[in-house]
Image 1 (cartoon, rainbow, N blue to C red):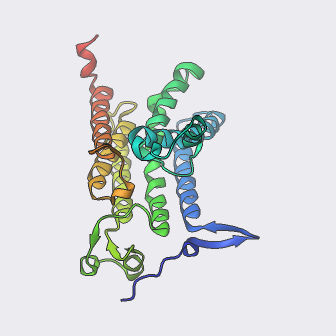
Image 2 (cartoon, helix red, strand yellow):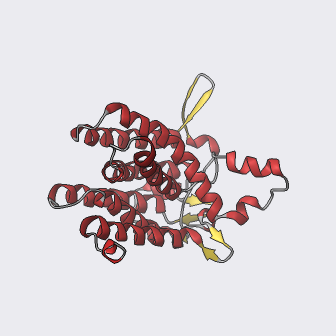
Image 3 (cartoon, rainbow, N blue to C red):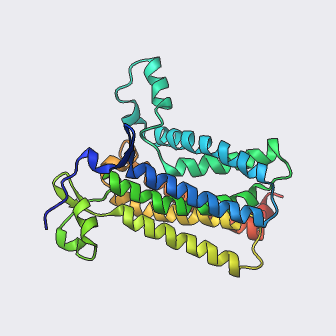
Length: 277
């Protein structure tokens, strides 16, 4: 089988006048749109305000973008600042949101923003109920968005033989020929894992009748932490984050899963608060 000959133009789906529209952009926007629709439907079922959802959505987009960049800077400082020599360069590092982002940063800062929104802006809004609705929908966005990484030849795994990819369709195998080697399609594994995690939460919402507010948002944090902790060690080093020899992207995912598990126990059974109340 002849491997796919990758060129930057191969990622372009079509042009609007002279503006190229990439497959990455189409897939990321499609994932975001689907997640928004699912969250909106669930939001309205709970008789929550439309304006409130719109406000959280629009501000959440800004928080997600900057949160993703800030998280990447914090957990990958050596690579980010290695060619920085002045104050202006430092500012450009923070404002360069087009490269070097982490979805875990988006999740962390969106969760924090929803908490602050209740505490300081709209006390009638329950942040626990909000994370139950908004965070799980992000799994759908990620499941589709990862195919944008496939189109861009990004977030791939270690080198493997063509035979080890025999279970995959030809179009995936060809596109996994990167830098002279076939690569593990981590985008595909994470995409399926995200769908499975969403299904677990969706079924749990239907069957766990005695669940308390915040449990399903916390379940998302736990499950996504597990998914990323599983994937990170197998990523190509280009897409890992480090503090020196420490694989920070892996340990951050472990912390995510621990925090999510802790929140589930606390929200549902108030187990931890027994020790400090």
